[in-house]
View 1: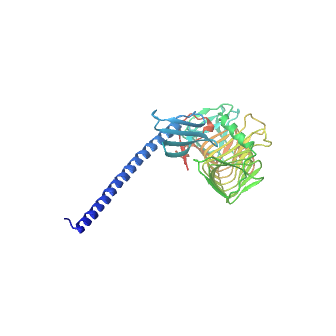
View 2: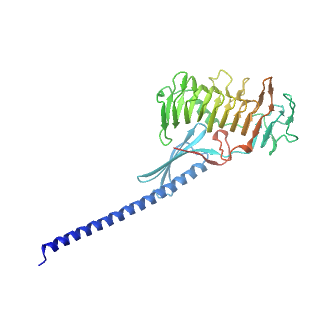
View 3: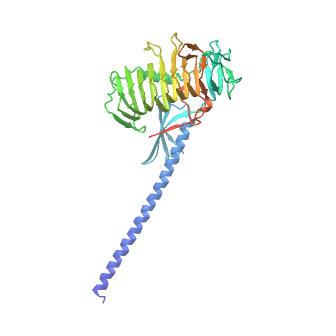
Amino acid sequence: MLKAGALYFAIVIAFFIAIVSASLIMLAAHYRNSYLKEIRYTRLLNNLNSGVEYALANKDAAEGKQTLDLFGDELDSLELDRKNWGIFDLAILKSFVKQDTLKRAFLIGNLTDSTALYLSDEDRPLSISGHTRITGNVELPKSGIRQSYAEGKPYDGGKELIFAGKIGNSTRTLKALNEKLLERLKQVLANQDRKLPLLQQNELKVSFLDSTRKFQLPQIANLADVKLEGNIILVSDSLVTISATAQLNGIQVYAPLIKVEEGFKGNCQLFAIDSILVANNVEFKYPSVLGVMRTKKSVVQPQIVLGDHVNFDGIIFSHEKERTALQTLIGLGKDTRVQGEIYSTGLLRVEKGSKVNGKVSCNRFLMKTPLTLYENFLIDVAFNRKARSRYYLSAKLFNAQQPNQILKWLN
């Protein structure tokens, strides 16, 4: 007969063997689940990348949500939600296999041509004087470009009037903007939705993977000591002042009149009916947008005026459907730098030291000096298409036929 101690010992050994066996089984199951999870994640990521390529390739895709069965096996699905974010295209992707999901959002931009200047043909030449430099291809009136003597100085660029570029002929009008997009911006400016909640938070961040948050601003609003970021739209039917203490990142603001105070730094899209007035020493980071559009409510000359020593990275545009006596105006202050594009269906007023690294399109130039105002003169001004960042991308506003690319990843 076995002793009781031996039986007890056998039970203990069997217990430890069971524990070890169970641990090995659980460990194997854990590694198997981790392996399958990694496979699912890789599959979702590949599907998401396919969705990015699909969104970029389909330039004329309709807005709204669409669900795609990537391989026709009803196992890999992708949801693409395409919408406007200001003047840019916004794509929101959701890749899912059963309960597993990955999401991603990004702005879409497009490459641009090599044009530095487009000046409408109003039967008058462009005159340049002093240390003016135009670098890149240009499209000018048939009367061309000429050297002139102004403000006590001649043109100092020698025989070269255009550097590293070719001269072509412009037409009577600028190349048309995207009318469908402009109408949508004007609808928001019309402020037809009076049921929006008032903005009451001083600090708010909204993911682009969530629904857009729209707020009405109070009368004569002053955005001071606020921190607003992401998927936010602010609408007002009166003056909006943006203080230097405001932190705005990626949001949109719509109002009849917008003033930006000295010292402000941020990234946003501002749209107005009457005017956008930017004080001295302001910095807008890429991809910012300033736009004024003449509507039926416009009672004054729509204008965008940038003060002295302003740094702006992005797109500045003005628009009116039919030319009026008071054409829209964009003004650049002394030593102000714009990296991107300026489009004015009217006048572009510059001062000495104004610099645009990118493209300029307008009907006519106004050169402002302490003594006088010259028409179609440029004095000590620089337009340099080649100095613009090679990573810069434009917007669908300009109806460009260039390939789409990812402008910015969004949270």
